[in-house]
Length: 520
Ligand SMILES: NC(=O)C1=CN([C@@H]2O[C@H](COP(=O)(O)OP(=O)(O)OC[C@H]3O[C@@H](n4cnc5c(N)ncnc54)[C@H](O)[C@@H]3O)[C@@H](O)[C@H]2O)C=CC1
Ligand SMILES: O=C(O)CCC(=O)C(=O)O
Image 1: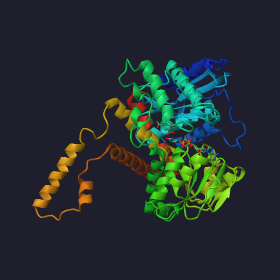
Image 2: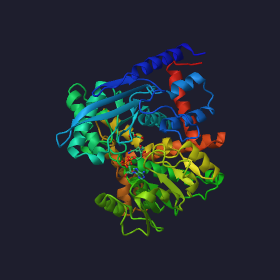
Image 3: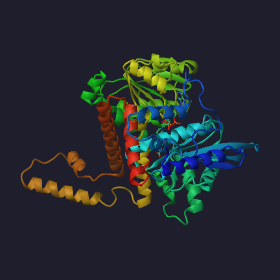
């Protein structure tokens, strides 16, 4: 029996679903809460088939709910998507032709506001994909104690097929559409980069939004994160997701007891790493692994993969990749796979595999090829539930997306706070801290302590920069969340994905309950 609050929520969802069934004409939009109606796809009918992304997330949610004590009503509230918008608008292309562009945004949960999550430009984007990604954002934010509900948006284009001018037109118009339907604003919904977008697109979004609403709202630049520094961005956001993947994986690997429990030799140093996707997340994860002693021996892109048993010079390889548009032909590689065979490289010999490209890359047909004992999910949803079962059976462990790639949203949160407080972190205290430390050193030397070498003294005295503060906050968030996940996994004897889910649901339930929504 549904309680009154649950019945109201269910009724709202039904009304939403009905309004969404109306055909969507170009230049129109629909906003509603629905969880069974996906205009671009029907439900999965054959249970033997790999689920689509949204079903995949729901399947994991359902599995995890069994380890919570929550009522079916409460679980339903936490699972369902609160609102979605689908927009279409015309683009005049550089050659004068007109093309209709489709965009989406889903706000999975309003239990905390604003909603938060990236914007993806890819021709694979559809409503079920943004809903799946938005729901992962809700759980991810809870895992790292970032006080947001989850959202995600996307525009269904391959950005490689559009000029810079066309991409700017698309981004600005999409921003206006989002604003029209209440899907962007510093206190409502705050986008960020995802696949196919970066600081440049965030800058266009910020400019469009502040041009229209900046006069009335001094905090308008907080409408989006991942901006360039000159546009109100923060030091350390660009590399935050990759660095978070590194911090998270290191934390697992350095945990002796846990590595013994899962049968893996502890320690980061000397572990070999393979990375799929050499974009923002994959590049920075590779950079930090190799800088801290874990050579990256294989890199896989959609159009080819390369290998070197001694590891790559990541910065040098990046320069080559940007210039050539492919990894193939790089002089430092000892082996390569062509575009057609690139996925085979997922089965390469290595200790850690970091899928950092797209969802559903490791699935029921290739999971058996994986040799890595640790799969650290840089991407959202790269391992299907069937593949995870197979990997677990094979003795591998999956470090889940909602934990491992939470570094991006964590630093986005810091950027949003910086924008709201209108001052760079550390600006008010840096000199005070330096004076304090100078006094400590002077007192120590008066009392006969040995003097430090000049560079050690400079390091000791200098107050933290914005980057120092951001990195410290990121590391603390990641290590804290990993510790919580390990604790729940070992107490309940469940996988890390289930443990991260359970921790997220526990925190979200508290927010609902203490807001007065008690169900069942
Ligand atoms: N950018 C961020 O801060 C965050 C990104 N993520 C997730 O990480 C993943 C990657 O995102 P970004 O690095 O930002 O995107 P990106 O667009 O910078 O890079 C993606 C890379 O993957 C490559 N790629 C695409 N399909 C591939 C395939 N089938 N095989 C191999 N490589 C392929 C692309 O060529 C590109 O180099 C996505 O799942 C995204 O949702 C998650 C958290 C935050
Ligand atoms: O930085 C953010 O706000 C969101 C990043 C993102 O889209 C993700 O974590 O998947």
